[in-house]
Image (cartoon, rainbow, N blue to C red; front, side, top):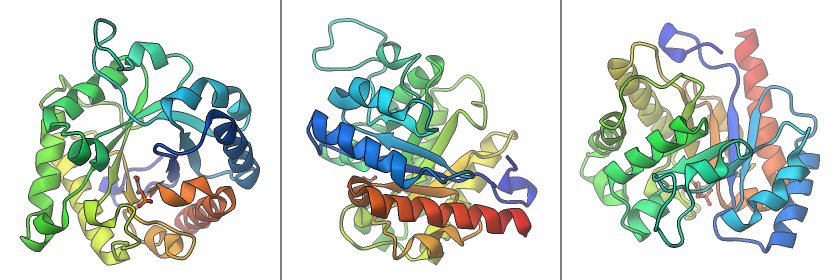
Length: 266
Ligand code: PEP
């Protein structure tokens, strides 16, 4: 994998499907099967599904041998203890591949603070789980011209919890403008590229090792995926609503595959 900081874009994108609080366990298993079938021809893209916690153990065997990775939508930072309702990274380690931390619904609906996101991030890494760190501004923050300040603040709060730079493949950032999540209002490719490039710069200023992959998330569909992936710094997508429809999700993955091939031949 080559870092964009050295002038070449990442050649292996990631497309992850955040199922949020949708599907029963049986429906989730069926959806996982359908996703595996829809992405079976994929060679150049890291594909992941993030089912609800209750589904993870049932979905795991469906993914076996397919290359599709399994992620949890959240995690607590403590290893164990009297924390009713929470799931620890130790409980996921060894069989679940990754966690998602800092999703805007966690931040804005459940009041999760930047420092708590940082603790979840560090705890995931410490247990060998890859982490997708979601950051992004609200529409008011964008209108006030504060987009870069907001993503910098969210990133810096995570960095403050770290002793050193994480391995570049151990984490992934998802730039998800809050105003684009579940709204059908996608950021334009230029808007997304602008912030994703800024995020990479910000990370490189902190860690000389370079930036991890940065995905875009927010109303990604088969219709807009290719134009987003054509942008130089966008290394894939975090997909919400459309990830519940396996065939359409497969089309987004195929668009990332095409973009990866194009980057390789650039
Ligand atoms: C998300 O939940 O991370 C997301 C991007 O949702 P949607 O694709 O539905 O906007």
